[in-house]
Image 1 (cartoon, one colour):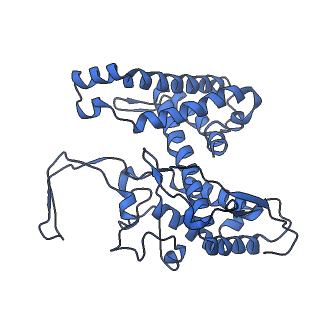
Image 2: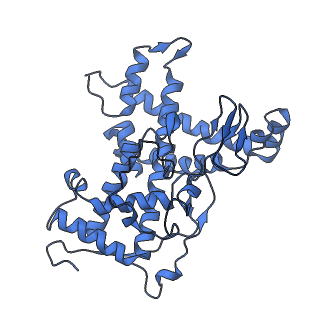
Image 3: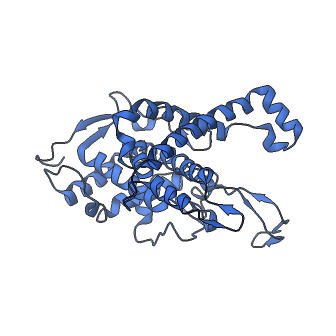
Amino acid sequence: MDGIVGTVAFGNIYGTEHLAPYREHFHHVIDEAMAVRSSFSAEDYFPNALGRLVDRLTGVASLRERVFKEYDDFFEMMIEQHMDKPDNGCASGLIDVLIGFMKEEHHQGPFRFDRDVVKALLTNTFIGAVDTGAVTIIWAMAELVRNPHVLNKVQEEIRTVVGSNRERVQRDHVGKLKYLKMVVMETLCLHPALPLLLPRETGRHITVSGTVSGYDVPEKTRILVNAWAIGREPVNWDNPEEFIPERFEGKDVNFNRAQFEYLPFGAGRRMCPGIDMGVAITEFTRANLLYYFDLELPEGLKSEDMCMEEAGGLTIHKKTPLLVVRTRYHTSGSMR
């Protein structure tokens, strides 16, 4: 997942041997950044001198500063390398597009498109794509090996559509994989990568009706939407705790449209801007894995014994690592 997002962000240079040692360290920094973002900070609750003092005494502030300084140093190095590239009008990655805007000195009112803006957008690209994409794929694999009938059905679809003796699943194949898309949607319903959507704030006083007493929400109230709970709401879903991709059969699900019973990417102006890329990468990666490999649990482990507990944090990881035995599927042979 990191390789795909890195190539989109920085172009082919991201996969070169020259960057190998920097990449390895950067992976560690990404993990630390995710931990810092989801950790307790006194300043979040006491945004004054007291909160800052507590964070200093507990070491939270120094850790935060070190991690994001290393983040900044890596992006600064990448910007410098791309700044020296000849401008031939062909952008090899997102960073080239952003540098182009910076060189043209795009600005609107007090806003200026400078190096800090470039680094902020690159940070959002990595934080928002690398970890969430990997988490979604892991949960999907866990649910599939836990539900062998679903695994067999989706593999049969993929191998029938793609055929035998293929080097890899192609982009045009993915569009025909209807059941795979249902598996992706069911995974995002049960296991949204971000359990809580980005915070919102009411711009005016709101009265919400439809309940016994209704709700009065004052102006300037911060609201956190629980996407995890929405996906498991019995009012909207039959057997919400079970992995049933067929529930999406015949349903018109559009990630870019507000459907308030299903919000894995949020809604409105603060919804995830990388929906299309994230879904495409998830579907493509999963299709290739399921085309080439048969998956099963280790000997002696039954599906009902699998630990599906979740670890707390900004993203929902599995509490215990996923253990799966994979065997190469012989594409030229008969399908099992």
